[in-house]
Length: 107
Image 1 (cartoon, rainbow, N blue to C red):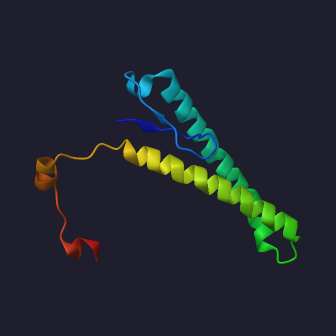
Image 2: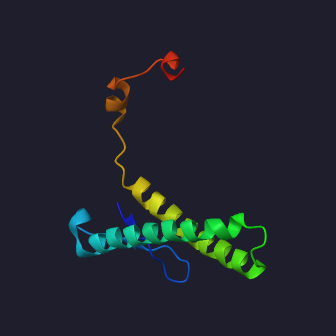
């Protein structure tokens, strides 16, 4: 199955199809890029919190923080979609035979 890459050109999606699986050079590069994007998102969130919490923050700072947070959220959603697509689905037979919990187990 092709892998959704964490980068795109002109907002278009980009997929990687490789015989090397998750050990190919491009797959490792994509993994590294995802890690960097998530780290940047965490940093932007930490830096944005005081700006957004302060009712006296200038409009330009609030707008800039919102734009950067939006970019980071877009990247995080792309990463989540890519990782979700790579989770193998259980076979129907395995799913039926697997452990089950009663409704009471959830309180």
